[in-house]
View 1: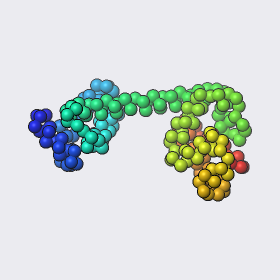
View 2: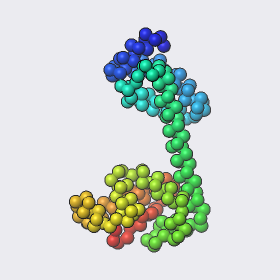
View 3: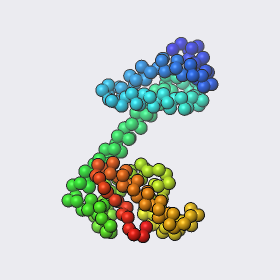
View 4: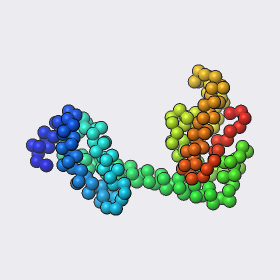
Length: 207
């Protein structure tokens, strides 16, 4: 792109001009695609998603673009590289979860038997890095209020009454919310591990 055209496009883009954004996409979508495909492989099914995320991120950060620090092309390349790295971090996370689920399946059912029960977990389960990996991943799948509530009650061991005082509500309301949060946790845990009907946190009569 000619320098004069780039300066004009930059000015309009930073001002939120929609036509400027369409011009940016038309000018750079194909070269950005090639950059991403070189890093991910030309046959990667997710190249299109990474390219889309690159342009969405560019739109969100347009006002911070400083032409004195480099051209639009190098700016877009930097954003694309960051999103490729983010893609691989997500893939690595998914791989760790799959490996952890396979380990749980392969331990003669000890961990899975506890997950279906109301009994205290055996020492092997308490020490299981695989189970800890899946629990942390599952909590991130939940809404903030459910994830925080479950972590506070079951990981930090805070009594229901103290949670109720902190949230200025009743213990009954907290127990009701805990029941809903546990149901959401079971569903998310099952999706991550492809194991149905798991009740990791248990549902004792008294939460």
